[in-house]
Length: 630
Image (cartoon, rainbow, N blue to C red):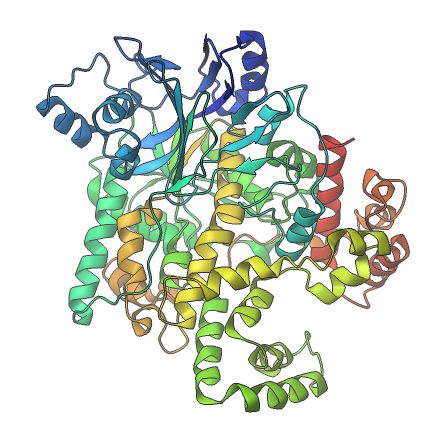
């Protein structure tokens, strides 16, 4: 697990300053505290920071082949590297190390760019062919590992694992992309199709980009996509056995490491399932790590402890303060772009604590996206069934009128909070789902923006990208389309960004077995009633894991990491909330109506409304804008 950076002169072979590469990699030194390296040749420079996981003595990078034709800088893990090595040795390839990095080099020699289709793992890498003056940039199927890039005015392309590596280059123009400000406010993160810095891009998940010196830049090539358009057949018991086989395979393949390995354990279904399968496969007690909160209503550590006892793990638990808002500056530094998922705070703390005991930790991330585990999936599934029963011409005026008249009752028991559902039924499935996953809806953003900002946006709407994704998805149902959109937007933009930045900030490698692409492909082919049934998401997975986990773990309401931001902005952060409207870098941008922000802050502090999520968004946007644009 590492950090990479580089410079490629597409139009010429002018030299690359090694010191510039070093500054780029030094900016991401936290990703690789165990070593560093720089390699340059005419027109190209590659840099690397290493966190040693496999072949501790022989995996230093940038790595050259014995004939020095191919050079690699690689971030990630290839879980099937041993199988690929045997296949390559059978056709005459020789190896000097035991690392997965050398397997990538020889795989490229044997099969060229399509070799990425054979790699099972999480990765972002740059591979240079000196003979053909050709650079391959590649990213794993789901986007577990990040890769930023931008073309500079001198014709060079610079790239790196984090935005801060690119920001070290003096020729990068730091101008904000207002469209991505809208995306950030809409969803709480900057999606993979953009960047807060105008012109900077992220290589899309499941793509590689082949650049040739002296030739025009082609578009990146997609080598993988998740397909929901087919359905697998089989009895419930047969599907359970296949799901369990794939989960076991995914967990076992991610337990390969030459350093201490363990797991995050929250006590929820997903992390408990991973720990159960690790315990089944391990001869030694599994090391598990969890955190609890000093506020009982937010604390899940009791459930984690029960699972630890059940599987006799070597369990480490730490109680942390729920009012951990001082960590916000640390997160802003590590995320670079604004990121408003407040669960990043406890995720950082559990990563920090896990690093005291292990270097690699398996997580339960991915099951909700793969198997429809979010409550919004269950609601959307029901809404889509209703949409299918009523013609559009009747549904829109009927539910639109009732929804507008129905009182907003956030305080009421959940079954009585029908306004959102009624209004959603008046929209298309894509429109309704975009609203469900959103943080700040369009009508509130419109009130926030200054008139000049609205003019500059020119009618741009963040939600339109999600609409197009869902409408064009390889899918058969509304639930399929919602899950497809989550895997393309939410997963790489929020979940995987959160885990990557918080774990790498402390030099910890996080692995996500439930995002194994073979497991995802099977899950995408399941009939809808194997994903959602009787108000339960992840239905088949829960049934499958009944042989391992108790009922109250499997079927209790989903909790996740919760942070009390509403209370923060009415207590210790009240003055911070009031100050967002003035005397901040964000206020000086002129993007927002300061009077509207002040009104929102006063309403929240006075207890008249809950604007905590919006205030947190604005606070984290302020910290990002200050750091990047000053």
